Image (cartoon, rainbow, N blue to C red; front, side):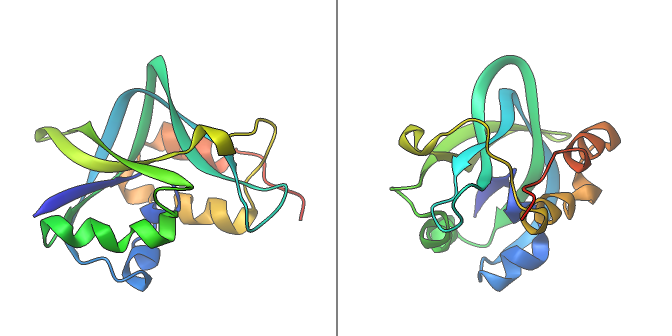
Amino acid sequence: MGWYFAYGSNMNPARMASRGLLFDLMLPGRLDGFALCFNKRAVDRPGHAYANIRQQPGAVVEGVLYRLHRLDEIEKMDPFEGTPIYYSRERLTVQTAQGPQPAWVYIANPALWQEGLMPSREYLDHLLAGKAHLSAAYWAALAAVATHPD
């Protein structure tokens, strides 16, 4: 089995199921030393942003850690994430209540970073669907993110 850490729209388990990823456990997880940002240019929605993470001392990204049925199960996500063009798939250590866990994490290609963008309301709602695995303060900060005025 393998592990996948979602910090963006894949925190929504319904979205994961629709993408065909097979998992048997969801846990709260966090990446220390990283910050969530909405700076990945949405090539399919001009002017919009998708979630990304960047290194930032003292910051924390919360998300959902999925235990995958098989090691190669993560390969099903690559087409949805546009790997390797839009996002790269990296191995990072995710902190859990059970201890550190190496997991796959997608990080946006720096060539697609653009400041000043906002996510759509629909996209942000996918992140908010991870509420059961996020701290109240983190969820509240997500809920306060400004969205694109579509």
